[in-house]
Length: 103
Image 1 (cartoon, rainbow, N blue to C red):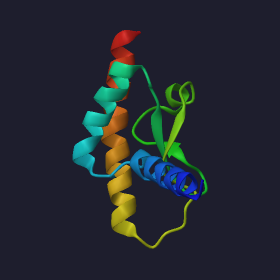
Image 2: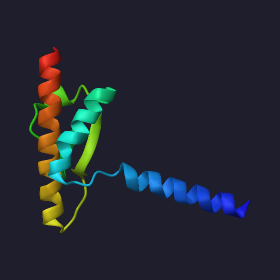
Image 3: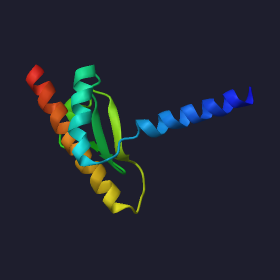
Image 4: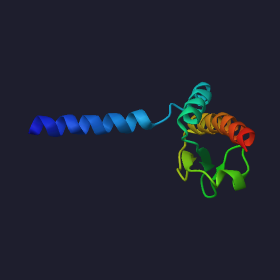
C-alpha cells in the first residue's frame, strides 16, 4: 500500500511539472498549433498588478480561458519574465490569427 502511495505522488508531481511550459519562445507556435488542433483555445496573460493579454485586444482575450505567463508574481528573474512575455506574444499572435480567420 505504501508503494502505491509513493507511485501516486510521483505521478502527480510528474503531471504538474509536465504541464508547465518551457517558456522557450521557439516552442510557442508548436503549443498554439496543438491547442488549435485540439480546440483548447486560450490566451496567455502577463503582468503584476494589472495583468493583460500579451499582444491581443483585451475584449477578445476575455472571451477565452486565461493562461498564466507570469501573472501577479514578484520575481527578480528578469530574463524569465522576458521569455514568458515573448512566449505569450508568439502564442497569442498565432491563436489570434486563427480566431480572426475563423470568424
